[in-house]
View 1: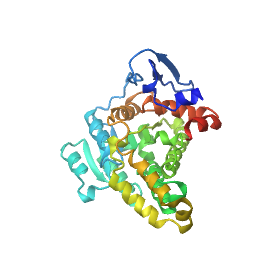
View 2: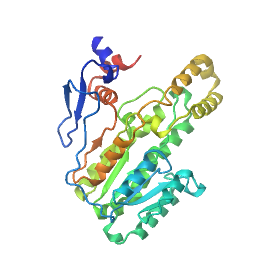
View 3: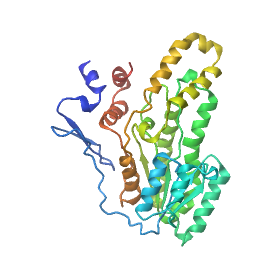
View 4: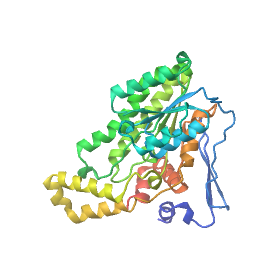
Length: 344
């Protein structure tokens, strides 16, 4: 029980120790180094043997209206890439799109892109292809970042909600990747899929999101195996908790989701759980609105490394040490052990 108590709290609360994570891919496992040092993360990706973008390498990033995608588009442009920023709300004149357009650069172009729409995805391929100086040399990178999230226990979540989240997060990633692979193969380029720590470990009330991110992980692994002999490298970025940075949830949005959820519940589910239980779960979800890190630089750095390093990593883990350790426990120890620690 003492082990359970220690593993179920953040490392920042453990006395006098910090965890340095040195991730080694290609067959060797991560090592843990405990040392009496500061409590700031020390794991850092080196950028030795970078690929030189030189303004000629094209990258498409999906979901650039806000959040990670918005920041990535600007950062990759600053690194010298020709960036195509796919935006869901370009045709509605969204503020994020306007800000990207205000850069007024030939190397940063916003394009209308709903990853659920076959026609828009194919149109994006045409736009990119026609914009390349040497289309036969292909496109360097694709960053599948577009995604949505929701919450709700299994009995509270409608099938429509499960399908809606999967259509964006999973099938949108598959659809966009399949459409751009011919260009990526010609360049022997990169695919970077934004997953989540919840693509490696489950969490109560998050099954619609977890299912899709577990799917992205599996799709990425299969694609990596297939693309290896063709020279295309596939990486997965698994961000931790960045709710505060991405404005994923607001109290207003949570209440709107909760109202529709309750109204749509079968009567037997309402009676069995009761309104008090339901409201307690919603209140708990509201406490997460401002949780997590507000600094997205670790995610931006991970994607940049995956696109520029001559030997990119298979997986990147931009998350604080509590979540990193929890992920190791939940993916490497017997389920009975992790259940004892994390099911309260």
